[in-house]
Length: 115
Length: 112
Image (cartoon, rainbow over all chains, first blue to last red; front, side, top):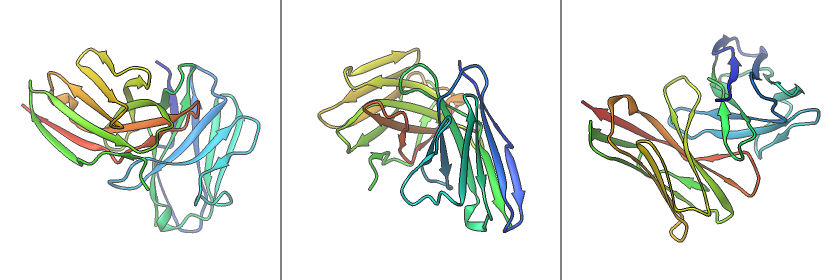
C-alpha cells in the first residue's frame, strides 16, 4: 500500500521557538495533503488542507499565521508551528490521498511537547 | 457539534468472540465511510471502507455495515484476536471532499 513518511516522530522544544514537521508521500504523488491534530482522548481534528503549488486551506479556528503550511512539491508538505506555546503540545498527523477515492494514508505522527 | 459520533469510548471482548464497534453520523451529505485502527503514538491505519451505495462490505475478519436511514454504521470483527486491541476510529467524507471527519474513537481490548 501507499506509504506516507512523517518526521520527526517526537520533538520537545522551548516555548517561543518554531518547529517544522515534514510529511512525504514515498511511492505516489499527492496533490493534496491534510494536517490533523489530536489531543489526548479526542478525535483527530482537521487543521488544514495543503494543496501543491497553492495556499493551504485552514479550518475554522486554526491560525494560519501560527501553523504555516508549505506544499512545495507533489511529495512533500511541511507544517511549521511558529512561536510554539505549551497549549500547542499535541499529536500532529499528516495524511495524503492516493488514487483510490476517499482513502487516506497517514504518517506515523509527531508528538510535540512545548515546555 | 460532532458530525461523527462514537458513543462507546471503550469495549472489552474475549478472544474468539465478536467485536462490534458502532458509529453514528449526522451529516446526510456523507457518502463514504472508513474505519481506521490506531496504536498509541502512531498514525491511523486504514482498515475497511464503505460507499453509501452499499450496505455491507467484508474483508476477511472485518465487516462494515451501513444503515443510511438510521445514519449508523458498525464494524464487526470476527473472531477477535488480542492483536486487534487498539483504538478504532470511524471517519466520513462528503461528496468528493477528501478530508475526513473523525469520531473520538473506541478503545477495543481483546483478552486471551
